[in-house]
Length: 382
Image (cartoon, rainbow, N blue to C red):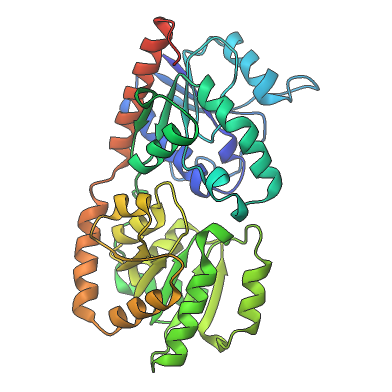
């Protein structure tokens, strides 16, 4: 069987959907060695697209298709023509898009519905595109994958997808995330100018991640307690950040706030493994992988009590309401003062994170492929 997978998320430095696409394609290729998996893009791949594969599975390829003035309209013309010309058996859209024609069944991953449900946290042009295309894509796809039961409910409710068309396949922390010995993490912290006693946030800097609440809670910790940890924000700058940076400029944080920018997985592993706490009070997530990644490295985690995140972390993290900065400040203060509680969260987090693997995600995804092929042969797309 020849399967096409959307490779466009690998045209840039990998973040959430890029990591999902990479890990899934890699583990699918390992799980089904008799099938061929083509990561397809009309854009050049980032030089790090398949970095870390040693060796690269023989049945996994990056294919950058040359386009012209007509086929550069990738989703409408270029990709459907490629599918038909190369007789693909199935296409998997890992980033909310599938072709509307081409003759083969398709699987669509919908990571979350933030563009519809939290539109104020995104750029207007992306919201307009999602409102126009998401209903169309979910109708066109033969099968849909959601990362959590929470997102499945939202897809069925807001996009009117039949429940039997949507399958939950949980995502997982990357295998590189595991506890790192203290002496190895110390070198990374020194290079990144991160102190021994620090609180960590990881993720793109954008409104849905609710970093303003972290900063306000941290300000409260500094002003109301004798604690003087460093707050480290690790992630690239995203969109609609003016309000956050204006607040940071006016806040009395001094040298206690340090922003590293985007960092590599190896550096991130060192920070996860050595932080006093990892905080992630996102307003909304489809899965919330950063808390699981942190847990896999042995970090105690404070995160949101929102449905999808609660579903993923279970009782292995301290949960707070995402907009209650005082509750977050209390949780930070209490846990920094209670080593036994942090040890308990570390142990519970390691156990919880071990339940999620990309091998299991690949098997679940392949089962969805088989169901999509079965439905397509039977002439039923809905």
